Length: 113
Image (cartoon, rainbow, N blue to C red; front, side, top):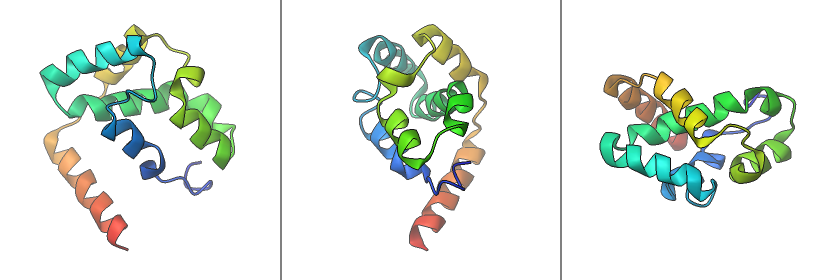
């Protein structure tokens, strides 16, 4: 659906990562994310990103470009899971370092084109 709507992850994820979600999520979520960030490092940011998308999947699939971007940049108003639920979903994702390296290379190659 994102491909059909011409949505690239950089349209919302850069905002999430550069602020460690501080401008996108309420404080009660940030506390949990920061705890895990200090323990697990940057991987938790990717896991939380995937958890957000998974928890909002049904809603996002019904929306158009503008509404999707609006929801993803203002998560505090549109996220329906609790901080504990979000973290539980995030920790379900296994992100091996090799996989992250591959995704990073793919992203860099797409940026150049």
